[in-house]
Image 1 (cartoon, rainbow, N blue to C red):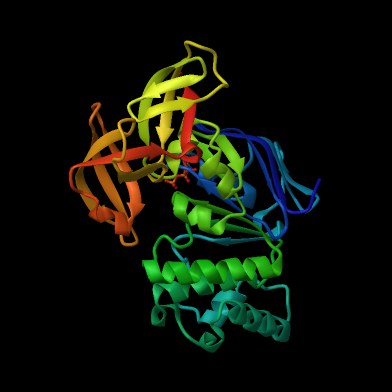
Image 2 (cartoon, rainbow, N blue to C red):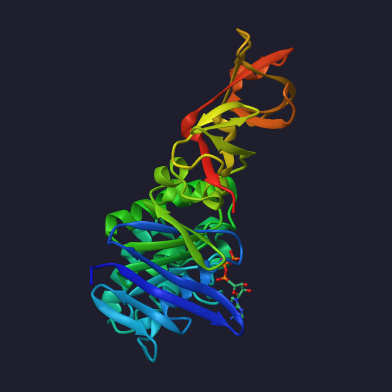
Length: 347
Ligand code: ATP
């Protein structure tokens, strides 16, 4: 069994609903792994089983070489060496910052406890707030204290459940960076639950995409974005343009032109998915171009989203650089980026 955390073949029911179906993954020391998936897919349940807050029904969990849960056997959450931070900071309102952080450090003497609290406060950049009370702190600061409280007992594994979702954009960005920095420096194995693909891409060394209690794909952010293994993963990182077609001699004819794909036999019905950033829009130059009319351009800052009507029929969306958004007269030509075009068999 390696260091870090390993969940093997974990299944879980709530009554007649099967919430996890044979989930397996591991997280190495110093690695941050995101569980990413839509609401209700079982992310939090997986995290709670790792923590010991939910009793394991099937499979096993081990932490740093030690089996901490298998059916009928179970190590208490506080003995697992696991730190946890949740969306709602859950600080005790009547206790000072120092007492909140020191709460879980009962086995140590006063001097050791003070040192651990001060170290954790330094780690999260809140050294001056030792005597403050939660109501005197902003949401972002409270979440820093929640992180400090989780770090103080020097856990080997950290479990984060949507830890930034209550914060505004600027605070969220700051706290993501602090959290990454602290966890990487301490070499802690971390699982973070999120439903935000962008957050997962930014934070994770590896992303585990889940849907309906199953792992859809486990890989690096690059891997998932550029080599999705199924339609679910391909369409989870933002909207996609979809076309259906049939493979003929390794080629699929779509309204955006021909797409080559030699993995499927002739006659296979397929769906072609193209990310909006995979449509390159330019001036119409020659008779072979795939032509479209620009219906609308919505600015998203540095990039714009173009709504296009294809001359051949149908509508598509393209994400284009801001400077291109002025190309909105008459016909434009579209070319496809093969790296952003994915072909999957129809079910
Ligand atoms: P979210 O992002 O909304 O938190 P999630 O992916 O974390 O979703 P879970 O919280 O793990 O999903 O829930 C998975 C399913 O299990 C949901 O349908 C939920 O209603 C159900 N569920 C979770 N906890 C319990 C429980 N204690 N009793 C019964 N059903 C539960």
